[in-house]
Image (cartoon, rainbow, N blue to C red):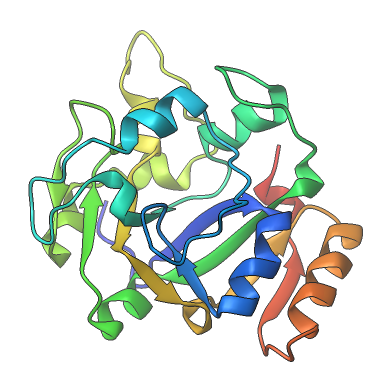
Length: 211
């Protein structure tokens, strides 16, 4: 499968982290000096701790903690775990989770350093790249599919579904193309947060992006 002409990137966060991002006008990595001290994590806490020290072997190097991570897809395995409270992940309602959407083109045009992983960045089988070439190693078929559970015929599908693009240190909030929510109630809440500082950004309901 060829590389898509437009590549959207998706970051899921707890909605209560949004006011800090909007006030700061920036999305920061966990190690950033200006990171939110009250950030609400939504992943596996043990994995989050391990990512803090995992080194990046390509420039600009650092660790996974020095990057803002995005998926290439919606309905990620992580979101599934959040909905169901699986694998050491706190169970949350889907209204609590929102998508920040940007694109590879936005990142590339900005000149910000980035790393592409062809699967879950922490997985030992995943390979890192720091140029456009890395996109050709992503399994775009599994990225586009709603099916990602490992099977006997393909026991590596879940890892590939979780391919990541990592942006070094931070990115301006104006690089976000839109914010997606599970329901109209969540959408109204997000519009209220964004509107408080007169941000011009699309906020929309995408229930099909959830479980």
